[in-house]
Structures are given as structure tokens and as C-alpha cells.
Image 1 (spheres, helix red, strand yellow):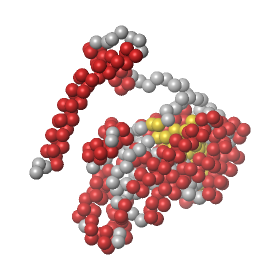
Image 2 (cartoon, rainbow, N blue to C red; image 1 turned 90 degrees about the horizontal axis):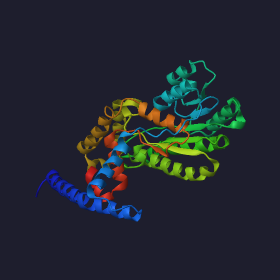
Image 3 (tube, one colour; image 1 turned 180 degrees about the vertical axis):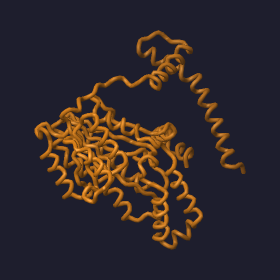
Image 4 (cartoon, rainbow, N blue to C red; image 1 turned 90 degrees about the vertical axis):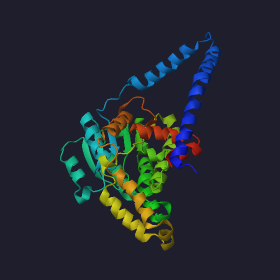
Length: 361
């Protein structure tokens, strides 16, 4: 029997030849048909190909059409998870642009470095708030702090950026129910809890809800089910909220970063090693016996490789969130990620599962 790589190569060649034939003969005919439906004279094959090519170039190469931007002056933004990573960098960036920033920090009362650095700006437009998105009490206190410190409470709060999040890994049979609950408590329920608490103020401002999901909110992956479950939930919540907020002229936006592990440090080799030890030691004996240590270590090595791969500059995510907050007409979804991850996400969300599974798993 031929090896799997050989069979895949043969199938890929067949698929490529078939696609070429279909595009060469079917596409011009299809374009001619639509041209006639629109009342245009029948186009020639070369004209059809040129039209498609020019459309492709225009989509890929042309800069985005200007959509206008709102003035930052007098507008306030609440950001969760500002101790490190995206939240910390975003708080400084939006403050620099002129927004009043309420920076929610988990470690403010414990003297966290991120909170201390933000407070060291000594500016009335940077307000650091103690926040645990898992705590109803602390969320309520944060909202009261916002109400009491808005320049004009009647104008409301312009935006909330639900950035706070945690990550972990592990195959389903190695992952405890407690881990699933802990990850979703921050990533999903924390997002919902914070949004519900601030929504009256945001409706008053006809502002923005910006939720950080992930490419893993659009496609799954092995070893990442706790994280994927929580981020899929954020996507669903955001869609439902967007429909509900349309009459209020509130924009609901989802930002779906790719692999920024190296940039944010949300996972590192020490965390991977500690998590792997915990997964193995707490797994039922039968599961350890069936999977085997070698296979387990092989899967962990894949996760470990992510720690040094991916984008090391957070600028694409900061640009996406800033546009979501400041643009007059923000996109519904932003995809700051490497090209190969973007292509994979498109294939996995648009192709039949049998084909995408074969390509990637």
C-alpha cells in the first residue's frame, strides 16, 4: 500500500488539474451568464479573466477605503486584562491617542508591574481599576467607579474592550472539568459579565463593544478544546448581541488574533511543562496506559513549539482594536494573524469538513 504522503500528493495533483480545468472552462461561461443577466453584452473569455484578476488585485493590493474616525477627546474606554499583553499595550496606546482609559488590572492591589506602570503616567485620563472579571462584586465596584469618574455620565461610556483571557491545553481525556470551567469563567462568562454591567452606559453613548475572541473561536484544534470552547462562546455571544444592539446604534465587534503567544507570553515553556506534568499525573491510570507517555510527550512538544513561533509584534492586534474603537464604520470581524493561519481558517470554515479534516489532521 502506498504511503499517506504519496497518496496525498497524487490526490493534490488530481485536485489541482481538475480545478484548473473547471476554472479555465467553467468560470468564463459563468461570468458570461451573469453578464447577460445584468444586461451586458456577452463578454469574451480574456475579458472575463482580466476582470477577475483586476478584482483580485483590487481586493488584495488596494489600501482600505477610508471609513472616517471619531474624535478621542471626551470619550472613555474600559479595557479588561491590562496587567500584561494586549491589554497593557492597548491601554497605553489609546491613552496616547487621547482617550480616557479605565484600565482593569487583576493585580492592582498586589502591586502588579503593569498596574504600577500605568499609574505612573500620573494622568487624569488613565484610571487604573482593580478588576477580576470572575467576581460579580468587583465588576459592580468597577462600574460604579466608571460612573463616578466619567467626564459626563449622561454621555455614557464609548467602548468596552473585553480583553482579559487565559489559555491552556490538553487532550479531552486528560483535561478536568474544573479546567474547562476555569477557562470559560474568564474568557466567556467574564466577557458576558463585563458587557452586561457596562451595556447601559455604552447604549447611552451609542458606542462599541469589542470582544477579543481568537482564530480558535472560528476553528478547532487538537489539544486546545478548553480554549476553543470558551472562544466559540465569545463569537456566538457577540453575534447575538450585535443583532440586539443594532436598534441602539451600538457596534459589536469581534477581534480574532492568530498566534501571538510569543508576543503576549500567555503560554511559555515553563507553563507548558508544569501543565503537562499536571495533566499526566492527574489522568486516570487507564487513560495513561492507552495513550502512552511517548504519544503524550509528542503532543506536548507541538504545543511547546507554539511558544517560540508566531508573531512577536502586537501591532496588528493593537491596530485592529484601535480601528474597532475609533472607526466610524468598524468591521464586524478583524483577523490579525499570519497569512497561513488566515488561509487555514478560511478553508476550515468554508470547505466541507471531510476536506478540511483531511488537509490539516
